[in-house]
Image 1 (cartoon, one colour):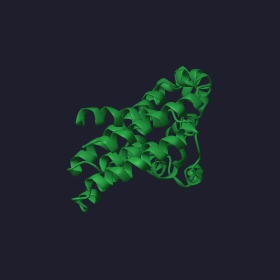
Image 2 (cartoon, one colour; image 1 turned 90 degrees about the vertical axis):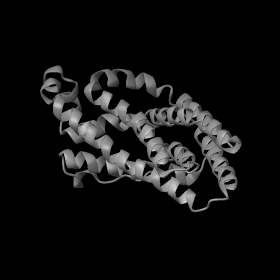
Image 3 (cartoon, one colour; image 1 turned 180 degrees about the vertical axis):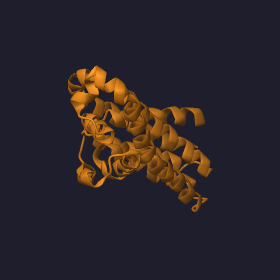
Image 4 (cartoon, helix red, strand yellow; image 1 turned 135 degrees about the vertical axis):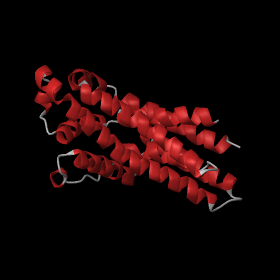
Length: 225
């Protein structure tokens, strides 16, 4: 069960990356953290000169949001240990909530508070490696509409773990699934942009797949012993 859940966590991170309110903003995040315009990032000569800076900035951005997600995973596992003896009830509650998240993402019904975006003023963040880390940190808290249902599902799974280290590992795989495509995009932005418009056509399908995936996770939580 541990191996399957790690793969699921990684796949959930990938789904978060391709979610409709995260994917279109990726070029702007990369532009901000690197200090280069999008045109400079896709121009071959300029990109080669700045590749090290762009890559480092992307890595620090990923470390920023990973630190938040991993801390949440550790907290979820730790808090669940405080109610030992109620594991079955906890799984029933979490499984039900996760299924509701899945129905929301699938578009069967909408949960209003999950559609409220919380963005931060980028002008206040310094344009250096520390700024890249801080932007990733605020990204973890601020981009709620698409990330929260998927992240909430993985956190629910972390809450069923027996050790805090298991929750940390689970959220590390989620962060890797979200962060690896971001890093790859930062060094191949031109290719990414050439496919972005095509990918946008399938946002509805991506939402449905994400919803079905989360519903399956909810059922897994309900049935897991």
